[in-house]
Image 1 (cartoon, rainbow, N blue to C red):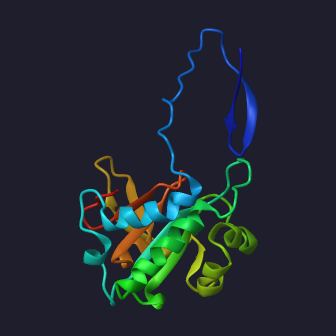
Image 2 (image 1 turned 180 degrees about the vertical axis):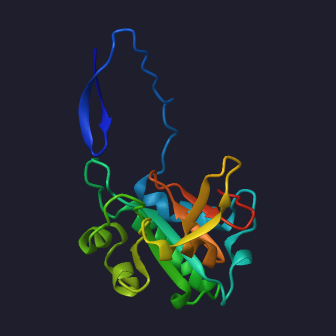
Length: 193
């Protein structure tokens, strides 16, 4: 049997045994209309699940890390404005209103071991204003192979190293954005919304 699927950055027809069972994910939850994303981001930061709202987590001395996903998958081009841009454009004014200083912000594209995003790709993701305000000093790609940019947190019970981007442990608050554009606010208790 042939089955259309991903293989790395390609889409292939995989040849599967006739007895293979194909499991599909459940239907996705209803989404948010693109025009409603900024308001949804603001509402989520004002009323996160399992942790205090953003103004109670940050102040003028807070170091904030904003992590967003790359665009390395072979999907159709994202319509503009990109959801990463919408989320950041909603979040940044909230951080400034809480007293966070621009120089205490860092934006990282979480490419891990994927190829690094080029300047024009980053610009397409975050928009010209964020690019102008933060690139290159405070906006860039994470290099998962740069030993100076990796913090070792310890080991698993099996003795495997647990390592993260150094900026995560150097920040007071890390805000991450996954592939679906769903935002997660993580504080010291690991809670998310």
